[in-house]
Amino acid sequence: MNMILLNPGPVNVSERVRQALLRPDICHRESEFTDLLGRIQHKLLAAFVPGAESDYVAVLLTGSGTAAVESAVMSCLPMAKRMLVLNNGVYGERLSSMVGLHRLGVSELKSEWHIKPDPERVRLALRQHPEVHAVSMVHHETTTGLINPVKEIAEVVDSLNRVFVLDSVSGLAGEPIDIAGSHIYMVAGTAGKCIQGFPGVSFVLLRKGFLERMRNYPKRSWYLNLTHYIDDQGKGIVPFTPAVQIYYAFEEALSELLEEGVANRFQRYKRAAVRIRERMATLGVTTLLPSDSLSNTITAFHLPPGISYATLHDQLKARGYVIYAGQGQLESKIFRIANMGALTELQIDGFLGAFEEVVTGAVARA
Ligand SMILES: *Cc1c(COP(=O)(O)O)cnc(C)c1O
Image 1: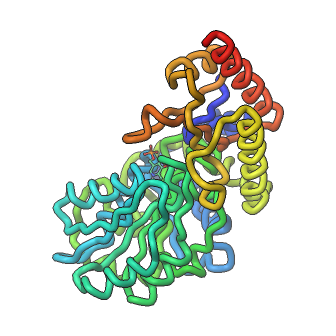
Image 2 (image 1 turned 120 degrees about the vertical axis):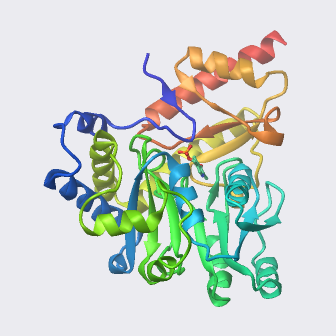
């Protein structure tokens, strides 16, 4: 049975993207791969830093989104400097853990999971802590579906001459963001969420001015060292065997994104999210976050009274729909519906019909 995936990645892909997996087997040390790599980089820059393509490089990694995030985090700190992590969810927490694990200095500004970080607190922290070299944050906190104030935080970080590193793994192609205009040095993304490719390839968009500084920093990983990739990419190769077929599909997904238009993609996702939220509201199912914090692609809802997550999940799955649980402290309280991926309105409506059937059935039995 073909499942409709309402989880935040992997997502349902189009038939066109799936067919791209079937292209010829190639060697990654041959010109065919160099050309493919070049086309993907070109399309990534056109999609995410339009008009400033020459100021950024796109580094591709074989690995899930975490590989890109970790490579950015490990590559951006000189010796004996610290990173300030703005933590308001599971993925912010993960940023801290990564930095800590590598015994790099880490400080945190924590906020509750439904609260956005305050740019003025960041400004104060940076003024008080000259040893902080970089600030990292999650763009779209997948834990709750909250959008963090990227532009405001980036402005503070830039005005105090620090490096801003952004995990936009679940944000890119789902949410508006002005990477070049906000002077963001590093943004991590993945093929397998809002770009509608397969999981297995991720990327970092890196500002060229910073690249030169980064070369002098200690190397902290063999596989995830960004300068190694950049130097090889300059020669049209990658240092390690790439997931060639996933790259084929990634290129196709980027072509689809550019044909649809990045802004139209946001709008399509937003329409789907609004459709889901409105129908849920008529069923008395409420959102965890206030409407001004909500993303275009994930909604965390309170579990309706009288139905456990397991029951809701299993009954929907039996009807062909995969929903997503809460994480951490929210595990027993919420469920999440993501509307990323190549989904039609008809499929969304099909899900909403199934949801209504399951929930009203459970209430009638209770
Ligand atoms: C999904 C996600 C990741 C990690 O991605 P993987 O592909 O599972 O490694 C990192 N950050 C955020 C915000 C995410 O949503």
